[in-house]
Amino acid sequence: MAQQPEAGRRAPLNRERVLRAAIALADEGGVESLSMRKLAQELGVVPMALYKHVPNKERLLDGMVDTVVARIDFPASGSGWKDAVRGRVLSARRVLVRHRWAAQVIESRTGPTPAVLEYLDAMIGTFRDGGFSVDLTHHAMHAMGSRLLGFSQELFEGSGSADPNGGTDPNGAAETNDGAEALAEAGAAMAAKYPRIAELAAGVAHDAESVAGDRGCDDQFEFEFALDLLLDGLEKLHEQGWTSAGPPGSAAT
Image (cartoon, rainbow, N blue to C red; front, side):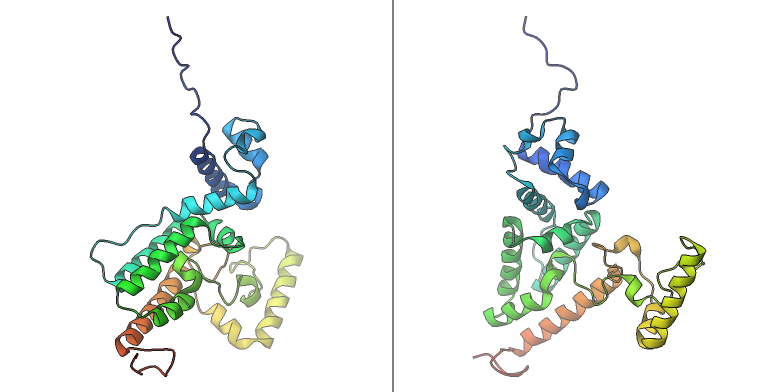
């Protein structure tokens, strides 16, 4: 009689399973904590077994990026160019909020990965199919930048540099009393030297749950505000027949 498969036997190792496990580890502990050895332990294999599917960590990161980007929703059928672009960008942002390490890894690549290239090609196609000239599409892609993939480079990359409280808890909680006093003094000095920055930092609130990556000043409202400004501006330029050969409002030839 043929022996029955053991209950609970692990699924065969393949590239998809390797990438899924790597993404789960990065989601849990950050991409900095991910290593081939740790990934092998998670999968219950020796590290050498991974190299049949990903030749090194850089290719592993490439595959993780492509897996995540492939999860971005396609636009609804029949959407106009503006709704299609907005919908895909906000879907991309939702994906990156779920995988907070992904923006950092996308930025670290020496060139776009295949899934990113496919995504950008589709975005260009959306503008072109919407009647945009090659010229305006070119400038639109530059203006949108990384926002197309759901994240953006912010002016202040952390709240500490612009925080008039010096990064302390607003209720007074701090690591130590001495540390709190030093931070408060530094914050007061910063506010005195740069009062407009301090005013701005003190006057806005940010939703930590909607931040993609580790930049404290990129919450969902700010992201959509800038996205809509860009799309509204592109819509006006498109309607005006804008061309880079002349000022806004000049007819394309």
